Length: 172
Image 1 (tube, rainbow, N blue to C red):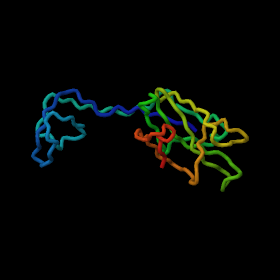
Image 2: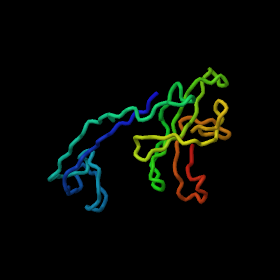
Image 3: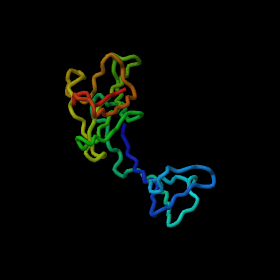
Image 4: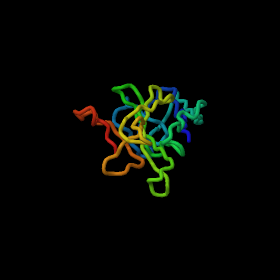
């Protein structure tokens, strides 16, 4: 299976806008110097020098950005509901993705694993060896081991206040 990257070009504002309370009764934040995302005109009474341009999303021409190349990724890989975050500290993207493949030890003969990949640009990904899970006699893989609970569609956050650097990423 392939992981695809969509490049979305959102709302482009090319103007300086004066915001006043509209007659609809919606009140913008108190500062007239505040920044606003103008998705609609509900808080605007008047607009000058504003050009709103909506762009159609374009698929990334280099798709797929990641392929299931390992034996534990034979059937499918995907980020369906999983986390991909940018880590300011290491200046890289970190992604936790699901891998499915046949596994005679699992119900229905297929298994699900959470794997890890990193990227400096969000397009070119590497799968670091984590050494946590034995797969076909080797721990040279990027499969995350899970503790007492089975993981499916985990969400990940970085807790920058955690004093132990090995425990900064929290998965639920």
